[in-house]
Amino acid sequence: MLERSSSRPEKEKLPLGHDAAALPAQADGRTELTATSLPAPTDDETNRKNMALLIQLRWTAVVGQIVTIGAAHFGLGIELPLTRMGAVISALVLLNISSLVWVRHRAAITNNELLVALMLDVAALTAQLYLSGGATNPFTSLFLLQVTLGAVLLDARSTWSLVTLTCAAFVWLTLAYRPLDLPHNPLSDTYSLTVVGMLFGFALNAVLLVVFVTRINRNLRDRDAHLAALRQHAAEEDHIVRMGLLASGAAHELGTPLASLSVILNDWRRMPDLAGREELAEDLSEMETSLQRCKSIVTGILVSAGEARGEGSAPTTVAAFLTALVEEWRNARSARTLYFTNTFGEDVAIVSDIALKQVIFNVLDNAYEVSRDWVELLAEREGDQLVLSISDRGPGFAPEMLAQLGKPYQSSKGRAGGGLGLFLVMNVVRKLGGTVTAENHRKRGATVRLVLPLSTLAIGGGFDA
Image (cartoon, rainbow, N blue to C red; front, side, top):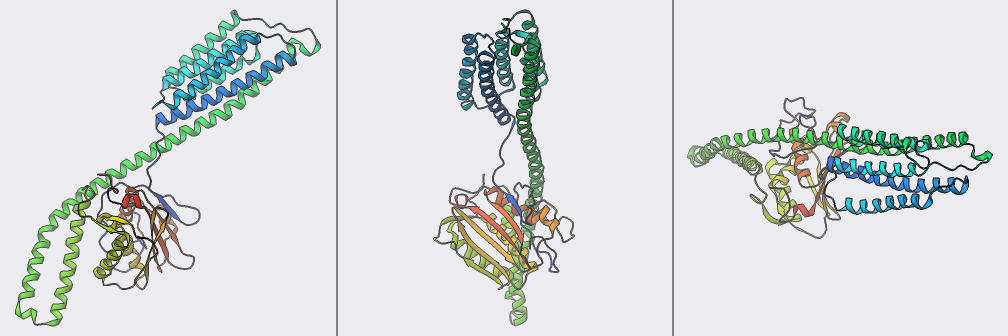
């Protein structure tokens, strides 16, 4: 079907100039191009996600402090300044609530704002440690959690600033702190409590590091993947721009010889020696039809080369557009083996777009190359989408073609520069916000499915100018 081997001479390919995306292969033998816009996990979006993780970590700290203080004070009988420690926890709660509101109204989160958030967490931890034994408190290991998060989230200068702050806080806690008043009983032996506290501190540190660093790395991987996709799109757009310039220049150059051929054919038709010979008249008629098709293709190139939607387009409906398209394709190729079924339902007003028509022509041409006796075009409606399924009885797609479908120069015909027709089909459908899927049938043949939002086909929708 699309770009598959055939003994039929090569036909004209789609002369369009829009950006494209590569098409991932799926495990069930289908290949799909999701043509909606890429999500944008840029640095700003990644920082927003990471700030949300810091807010979640702060809630975890609030709950952990409440549980730890309750267990130490009421379970182990260690006297703690509950009022002041509760005030620190209340400050963390207020900070988190204000952070949630602040993040919701912020257009972007910067590196410095992440640094400030981590410094506030260090300050809160320092205050709690000051009230509960200072540097002798085994939970001082939680400073390493803040440093690790800073190393993952911040730039180098900000990370070293956080390291300096945590070291200064630790040194200060060795000099100024409120000593713990431990009860004198076997269960409260200082050494035992220290070891148990270190165990809990280590376990808490390890769990929080695994949970939050893993999620932060996932955000960073999403950002890197998106940036890689943007670079790929930029390279493909540059490729399309160069192709568009070449195609536009060729179209202008072809205009003059095509006009000359048209004049010559008209002169031949009026020559008595040729007009009286029926077999020559039929040949002249076929030549004139082919010439008009060439002129139409050249016009399509010029209209599609960066022109705003509306030039060369006209108001119509889904049924009228598809009926006229099928009739034009049949007449241009003298093919009567295209079977058209319209189950779209209630008709909808759209714009007859030249680029979209050329997309459908291209898919039909490739299907016809490998299945001369039967090609089917099925039009359906799924919600607010127009679904066009083009099926054939050809050999189907090779697995390697499915894996690379939609990339330029991916063709099974072994022709240099081949494979651009489908590459450009993907671009047009992607610009319209739709998807393209391709799958093989179980026995023989294949189906290409174009899904197009009706909103972009309506008057006022479509391509960005």
